[in-house]
Amino acid sequence: MRFLLLLLLLITPAAQAQEAVHGGPVRVLAVSGGALASAGFDQSMIVWDPEAGRARAVVRWHAGAVNALAPLPGGGFASAGEDGRIALWPVRPGAQPERILEGHTEPVAALALSPDGRFLASAAWDGTARVWDLATGAARVLEGHQGNVNAVAFRPDGIVATAGFDGTVRTWPEGEPGLVLAEFGFPQNTLAALPDGTLAVGGVDGMLRLVAPDGGVREVRAGARPLVALAGTADGGLLAAASLGGSVTLWEPATLRLRHTLEGPGLPVWSAVFAPDGKSLWTGGTDRRVRRWDAATGRPIGPLGAEAEQAIPEGASPHGARVFRACAACHSLTAEGGNMAGPHLHNLFGRRMGSVAGYEYSDRLARGDIVWTRESVADLFTRGPDVVTPGTKMPIQRVGNEADLRALLDFLEVVTR
Image (cartoon, rainbow, N blue to C red; front, side, top):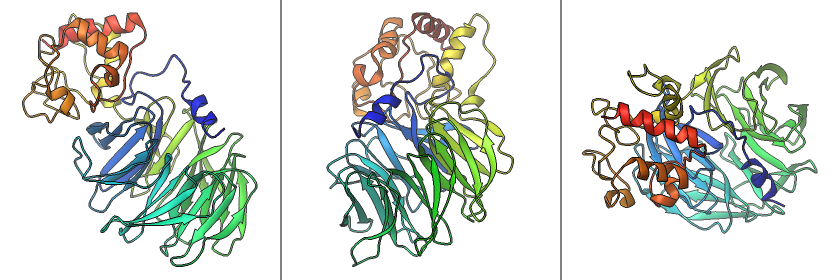
């Protein structure tokens, strides 16, 4: 049963927008320093320069969907997911993480960094949460939930809180057994800690609940479908709730007054995070886009990667240019554009794989045993980079429509010469 929801949401509409970089739903977002990271069902983590709208780095290391991200001290990120492993990445991630934390035996659903930056908490479908000492790698195992632990957060006082499939919200004072703070009778999916110690909780019944440190509960219906992501501003003045129904609502926690309903997502929204200054909200969902919103007005600012649109060179296919938007946030078309999260594509056809100077390739691509031709590029986007070049950092992107693929190849032949 626990995999049913995941399987349903992997079935995405055939006519998806082409501006996105991720090859599947964006499951989670996190902000660390001046960077934004997104990750999802395509097994990739993308680190963005949010102001430029361009990808800084693409990481494909996890063996399965990436379900959880958290900031790390110094500007890096922690990632975790279906393979049960937690990877710690520096500010500029390479092909391998700096460290790996292992112990969970089932998928990791959520991560959280402690207020003092010393500990990382994880929640997993093995029925446990863990609190990892980032200095030593040692973990405190938290047991008590019946079934999946879906969410974890640190309150401002440093106490860990969890929520799970058993409908309970629990706190875990150090050195003491876990305490059931609240119980709702329905699975709880997501958790966010507010500055006053209140815990915001979202469940499968579409209710947004605010649980005070003494266990008192206030609630409001935030949607007709399950809530799967919550995010609060640093000052506690605004709370975002995202649902599988495609709605994202912005609430005033003090009064539970609805401030805005964001117009436009229209598909299951899996993730949300506020910019450090609270002025922008980032969301990600089944349409594979990372979208930016004005938190004060609720108006869209635009998806990442949209800035990559440019004038179409003479003789190039406009249809192919539209398909290429899924690649444009990671690859420049000219040598002058330089390497981005991926190598530049100048002189792509006839070039040996892994041969662009100055780019740090994954071990698989560095072998250089493929020459890029129309046929080999078509194979890459037909079977997918995870099949053709296993171990690549490239997000899983496939072009299943023959006309789209032909147009993309026509476009690349003209613009990469």
